[in-house]
Length: 431
Image (cartoon, rainbow, N blue to C red):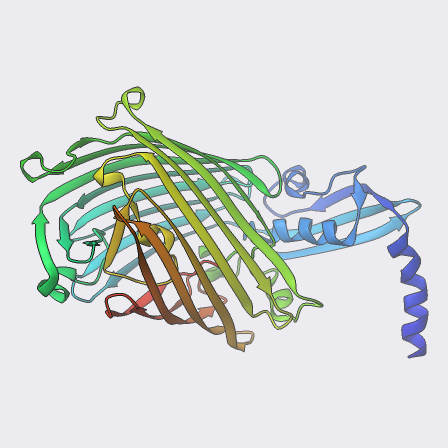
């Protein structure tokens, strides 16, 4: 107790006094010290606080290219000097996978990191099933994000009683036509080709500007519905803070695990994180589209991370289309993010809320085991009324520290049509 009182007496004045950031130095093994200093968010001459110091460390951890990452702060007069000692490396890994069910799908990915000594990551993915195929390539740097995607999908539309539609997808493992044959009213065959670019520029630690041009062509049988060009451009703002990022492929060789010990420790107090997004999408003659599109999308997610690292997640999403055609309609699955469904509602506008609690059954040096019950509800304007689509279920997930993708099982019960979905899941939004 006496030692604790003496230590508190020495530290307390430091907490009250305002200091500035002094000299920042770095040691590295691959990238240049200047590059690492540029990636560190604190700069010489800025105000120093323990909170800003921790957030700056977290940003370097999120690069996921370090085997070791140590920070040293030393008081020199009115300034706090900071030294960073880093052991960075590079990686490149291929991975193949296969999913089964009513429909089978497969794919292969290639991921690389820090090849250009900038803390960047790159990825290439290709996959397909009997419903179509897709190719995806991207580059992520601390300042920029690029993602190119091409999809060639069956766009078969099946109309069911109660305003339900099917969900065309490469990796859909259910067969809604077979499962809901009694309520099938009409079926139209078609294909959809989409080529899109997503670019994000980091304006600050918490704010990003996004630009999304998309070239989309839909062809329905006998030129039914809205066959033709649906080209559009979206622009948006994204903001987030205190969101834990997952591992990348470098974890297989020990990269990116520098905050593992920290992640296993309890927090001193509950931490609040958030993600927000607002996007406006427009299309028409000026984008070369045959149809007009004008849509506003807003989403927000709040997270409470408890001292034991359990997460309470609250999400809200809303979309409103001022102009649109059938193929661009808002869907209930755009507004629901936690369950798995083989049918959806469509309309001009809608809103949804979701809540989930991620409870860690186990946290140790090998990995994390969690269970996450959830409930979600959306209302979609289906013409003359707002129609609900809700679901409840749970996801059981296990993540090895040395494997970048969490794996588990998801169960979803559609509270409107009574259907059940049980599926194998890879990956997770937070963690």
